[in-house]
Length: 129
Image (cartoon, rainbow, N blue to C red; front, side):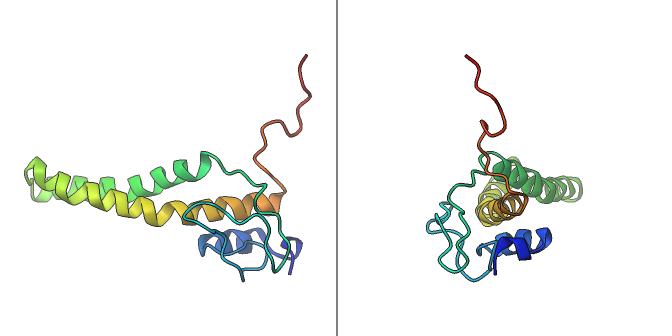
């Protein structure tokens, strides 16, 4: 199966599962956030895709929308001391970031692969002399 026969949402969902957006059979990463160069199953060139700052930005948005309401509700109803907030929320933020970052990067890679984007900032621009 190639990426051309996959829907955009299918490619994004496969990226969320940390699988190749083209076929869904091969793990997307060889390390925590280092994607494989080429899928051995469907030959999708994943190594050329650079998602750069988009996945961390999405991760901050998602984790922020989870944590901030919890902090506000906890403060409103219980008003714990500051040290309780630090001991509770900081580890939770780190864990959620570690959970969401590779998944959201996979979503970004899946979307970029399906749309034919590489993340190369020079693509489509003429060089200035």
